Length: 226
Image 1 (cartoon, rainbow, N blue to C red):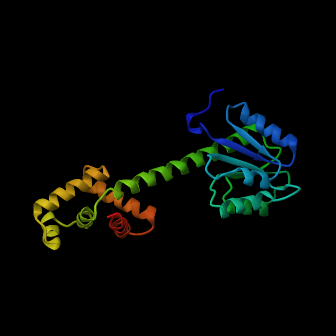
Image 2 (cartoon, rainbow, N blue to C red):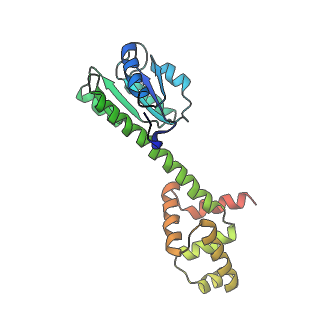
Image 3 (cartoon, one colour):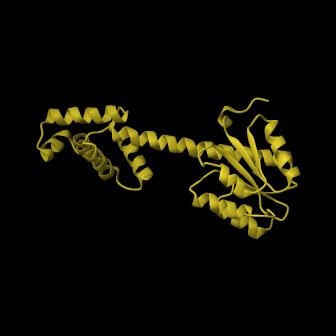
């Protein structure tokens, strides 16, 4: 069976102390053409997982020896690993479900759920992982575009974003109008936009990514590289 290109290279990690459950879930994933790894305890998974590989985790809520599924969620978060987690349990209750979702679980399923229900949760978890990784790459690329600007171009860019006319920017910076026009052109070209509204949109998008005004951040970086 062919897999969706979106899911290519993603691995499903199954953690359960019941060998039969591990093998059953692994078979479900394997028959659909996805890589799968199984572990009898969360500690073994954490020892093997680098936090880089894409995919999702399916873990039992209660494991006889070692971490519970909820404790694994906390351990992943403490390590900065954002891989999506699906919790399965034969003993699910409202309190466990609330805690699992609070910890960021995709869902909490009963162990006797249908294969369709489990597969649907896996697809959702893998799609969530893909979306998160795509967003990280997008934000990285966005920052890199602005990082190509020189300090003198950043100063002109700030005036453009503030809505100042070229002649006003030239007067404030004590430079010629032609110099302002040249630097403005360079800003648009390096950032990869064709208009000021596009530049403004990306600038404020970058502000959301950085959590601070991009100008000061970018200027400090540009100055340090000179």
